[in-house]
Each structure stands twice: as C-alpha cells, then as structure tokens.
Image 1 (cartoon, rainbow, N blue to C red):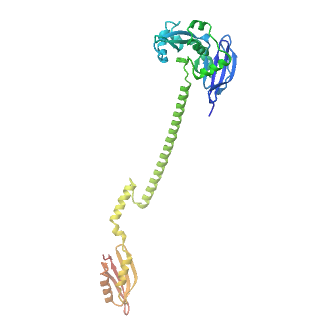
Image 2 (cartoon, rainbow, N blue to C red):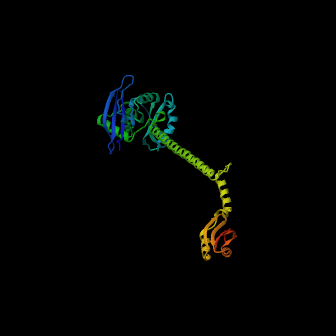
Image 3 (tube, rainbow, N blue to C red):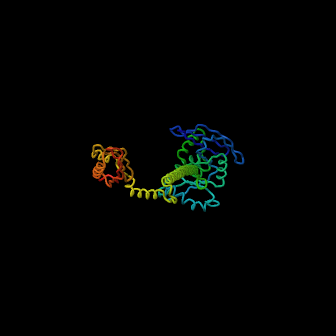
Length: 362
C-alpha cells in the first residue's frame, strides 16, 4: 500500500516554503521543507517530486487577504455562503463578483446572533498565483491561511478586532509546523471555490469512466468480432454441408435435373420407395427352403434354385413325369403361382424339370 503524500505550499510575503508531508499511519507529518525566495514581480521557482504533486494545499499570507466581521441569525456555513454575495456586494470595491470568499463562525452573542469572520481575496490576485502553480502541474485542493487560523483562535476570545488585524500575531518555527499539520487535518477556511475549485478528483473519475467505457467498448468489439467470426465459420460449414448434401443427392438420383430442395425431394423419393417396398424386398429364402426340404420326395433332387424379385425358379431331376406333378402339388402348399415350365427325359428312369413360383404362401 503506497504512502499518502501532501505538498503544503506556504506562500509568504518574500519567501515560499514547500512542506513535503507524509502519512505514517498515525497522521501527517512534515518530512522535508524547501524554502525559496519570491522575486519582486511575484515570480518563484519550485522543484517538487512528481509523487508529491497528487494533492496540494496552498497557504495565503495575511497581507493578501481582506476581512469583514458580520452577524447572522443562523450558524449554517452553507447558508452563510449563499447569503454573503448579497451582503458583500455593496461593501466591496467592484462588487462581490470580483472576489472569492469564505467564512468561519467566531461566537454567539446573547441575542442569538452569530459573529462571523468573512475572509476574501481579489480573484485577479489569486488567479495569478494559481496560474503560476499550474506551470509546475500543481492544482491546489485547499486554499487556506495559517495566519487566519491563528487570528481566528484569538478573535474567538478577544473583541479587539481592529487591533488584531492591524498587528496580527505571525506564528513561526515549530509552532508553524504544527499549524501546517493541523490545517491539513481541518482547514479553517477554503478559498478554493468557484473557478478555483479543485477538480482533480472529478477529472480522475472522468478518466476512470472514460477508461472503463473504452475497455467496455473493446470488450464489446472483441465479443462482436468473435460472434462475427463464429457466424462466418458457421455459414461456411453450412455451405459445405449443403454442398455435400447436393453432391450426395446427385449421386443417388442422377436422373434428377431440377433440384430446389434436396431434403424435401429426398423425402418425396423415400416415400415413393416405401410405397414400392414390396417390389424390392424379394423373398426370405430360409423359410422357403425349410418348407421345400420338408416336402421333398424320394428320388427328387434340385440342381439349381434361383430367387429374385417376385419369382422362384427351381431346376432338378426326378424319376418320372408323375413325380414332377406330385412335386408341383406339394409346392403349391408352400408357394403361390406354381407352374411346370419345362420337362425333359434325359435317360431311362430320369426326367429333368423346371418349376417356377411367384412367392411364398403366407
């Protein structure tokens, strides 16, 4: 886990001190301080490590600020900030539009009203300081004042407002370092308002959202690319399958010239074949041969038996023509359409015959 760092820029009348602060887990502490002079024209130079530029606090000297002590019937700071532009407009040279302000409550009087210290600075003066810091990639998150914080503590007790403002007590040394740490934890005022508001967190969120949107777009693009690829592959596979089906259909039905739907036409052919099944099935030879063997007469032998579609041809020899007639009569009990188609005496006591039948009797 990285250590949180804060850069506290302590701007004074003639010097600028940069306090590099770190959170050691028990609160912030000043780890290093670099001081540089401010030129007569208000310019200064900074050399701050990049890791210390993430969060910046700016301290303004008392000499750049103006004050008003006002009374309000309520203590809500947000409501006070809403009303202040109307209260300050006739009191400030150039009107409230030319200043940036904040307020802190001093005390409550016996009449139930609240004494409020209003702190403000001309926008033009603050703009020059902020623009100078932007040259070093520094964008103040809080714009406060250590001197105002010290003055606030005194004014809460003392009523000598004029004396305190004319001769303010400027804290130095270790006391100032302690005030820096305290101000980081709880700023007394924040003049970073309006055009000077800190937008770093918002910018980070916008960048994060943009990055998220970009990643989401990339993921969507990858998903769509994958989907398109799968669709293209599927289309190619379907086209290949259709091509195979057509080639197979043409091999099965080469006489077919007009092919519109292979599946539909194949189903039509199958139905036609099922209707003509009885013409292609033929005979079941084993049951018929068993019947033939059971009715066989002595002296009768078969030389050739042919079975094809719807016809049985039996050729053989027997002792006489009467035996052929008796064989025919016996076959009529097992088959239909039994006919003697040929007989021929081949020797004394032997006759060749040919008998045909249309099918096995059911």
